[in-house]
View: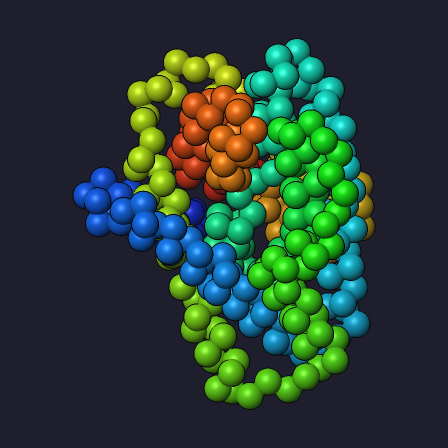
Length: 305
């Protein structure tokens, strides 16, 4: 019962902070320029700092085994969901198909996933999530962007390794595996900076939602289908996969939470870049973020180990 209450409380906190961002966006307290600046701080400073701080933990073979476990689960899941997306979404025209396929496969792992996992499982949860997102990041910039560009992209190692969050994972693994002692001052500084990730990310999402039009999504069946695939089917697919795998309940529950979150907001940017339906993408981004306030606690309460 306490676990269920904790899930509901955490989602409620995220929703309230998102509401503050929504209010600030409506009142123009956060304009486009400020929003871009806050997003840069989030992705280049706050998130990487939180990731590094999550790795400042005593080394153990059990913990290393769990890291490898969630990495393997991530690979298996992404292979399965890509194959499933090809089968389920074949009836759509190429424009809608690629958009919904991308949204089905790629959730908002950084801005939404990290705050949720951090709130539910603390810094060790962020550690596991950052490992889970490694295959995700590789596929995101290769297969994911390729859905819109119609090109099979190879892994640009330089571009991949220059990602602040990947750098943070590498630095964190280095600290963890070598058991490097980090001074209290550095550790606390990293922790304090990383702590702004949750409120900052949710306020940014709230501000972006404020700029979208709710009325346009009500009668669009494609929006509901996309939301259903992203918020319901994706976590159920994860649940089914890990039900057949050995592993700790903590790792399995984090994997489900990582897939119960709304779609990646960058979908809209890809649609703009490659001349796809930005209106549909914007509607789906809005719908999944709003509906996730209800679906996240439901999915995490019914599908857990």
